[in-house]
Length: 357
Image (cartoon, rainbow, N blue to C red; front, side, top):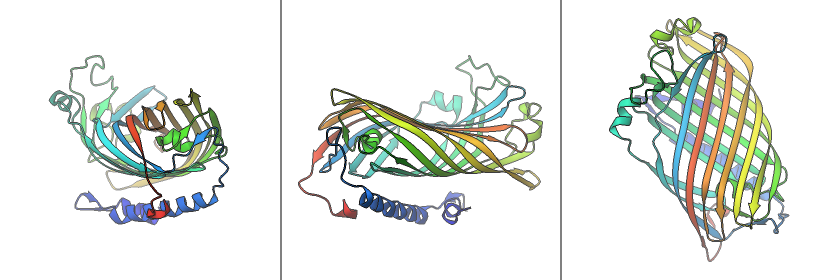
């Protein structure tokens, strides 16, 4: 594994220490961005894109993250879907050109929700860069505590008031690095589509190509398969941890539909192929592994209003992975984010010198 990814996953007294690693990742991202900016020629079509270079953004956000892991027996059309409990988060974001920071707080759940689904403890870190030619993502997530959803073996899925089976011992860790290149950056603004850092005032699109690395590990104190379901997943009854490492590439297309220079609808999709290694660990400490090919899909969409000084809308992003395990079953991961936002732009009197802004 890459050394700094190992550092992220290092544990001491049950806590994850990633401060030094996060700083290293941010430094690398800044170097990449400065190189990107120096390579971008000033050839943007100003009849399509308004740069907003001397403005900073203040944005209020309401975010709903969704994560699930599904173990599927496709031969018998059976599946176990583990979900996290991710309450809504309210946040405030401050952005200037490519640099931004967001502070958010979780909206408390109700007592009935806690009884039905339990609780999830989460730690996350996300750093993104969105320039016209490139977008770069660095992400770390640690989820502890899942509930079993869509399980016809244990409960009636239509009885919405029944408590769901809970797995407080289940832990999922994910490290994700990826980047996309946009070929037609003259006519398509990725910063406008990703976060309203710019304004696209005429419709335009671009082919894109991506490359990335994904590490994901799910483990528990007992078997990943609940006792009542082990007869349906006999090859996984003794497995307590599954880890996968992906190197992937993808191609796709993105397009922004613009109405009256201010209303927008952005859609993008990037299917890809992953070369991945899967490791399975059993109770007796035995570990088995293999290399294989899998599929992946990245999607993003947004809709709203993007005026000269005011903007609002809704944003969605997600990706899916599909891996065939040594046991013959499949592991499917779903990462999704829904966000509603409203924001304002404020003009600065002069350029900021911080990090070359």
